[in-house]
Amino acid sequence: MGVTTILIVVIVLIVLSSIKVLKEYERATVFRLGRFIKVKGPGIFILWPGIDKMTKVALRVITMDVPPQDVITKDNISIKVNAVGYFRVFDPAKAILEVEDFLYATSQLAQTTLRSVLGEYELDEILGQREKINLRLQKIIDQQTDPWGIKVSTVEIKHVDIPQEMQRAIARQAEAERERRAKVIHAEGELQAADKLNKAAKIIGETSVGIQLRFLQTLTEVATEKNSTTIFPVPIDLFTPFIKKLEKE
Image (tube, rainbow, N blue to C red):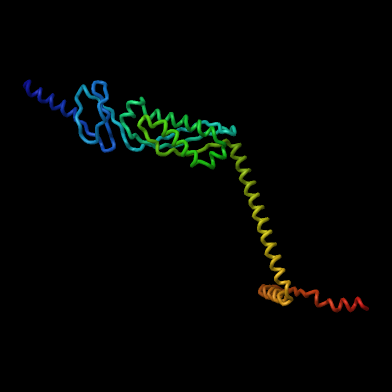
């Protein structure tokens, strides 16, 4: 093999090694002799061997699992809370130049923010106002990661681990609340029924015919049942003349 052939092979290998291809969701931050040049990609481009260096950055949404954090709520209750966050890189240059490891930095920031924010709420607020807290977490983390070229789209609290003693207390509180609501509903029903009965009695009592019709309707309802005994109420007004006659004697 001649010298010329060797040179040709070396040149071909150098050219092939300098050709880079990136996918649609990838970008490359290119450094030339240690200085940042530009962001390249997607598709095919060429790097000078030994002179240019690149760092690939994915632009797809990244799912970040925030591990369980020990949190002391505003009402001094110790709980464990974990969450999940979704973010993506919108500026590859900032993600590489402004922070050493943007994935690790974002994860640590999410953990500390989760502890500090939840410490400002009581347990009932954490359990009942998750949407509000999620929006606040997302806003805080997004503001702090914006200089790194990162956009945080969503932060969601996944699970709140409550001590067993507090779970029993919450269960007793919920049971007492249900009993209170049941008693209030029952009392409101009795009040409404009494009001309707009072109005019905006034309407029926205006005429004796109305009372008799109501009496006959009651007999009809009793007759439909399979009863061996029928109670036949007699109005006291029928005995009034006899009672007066006995009093005169």
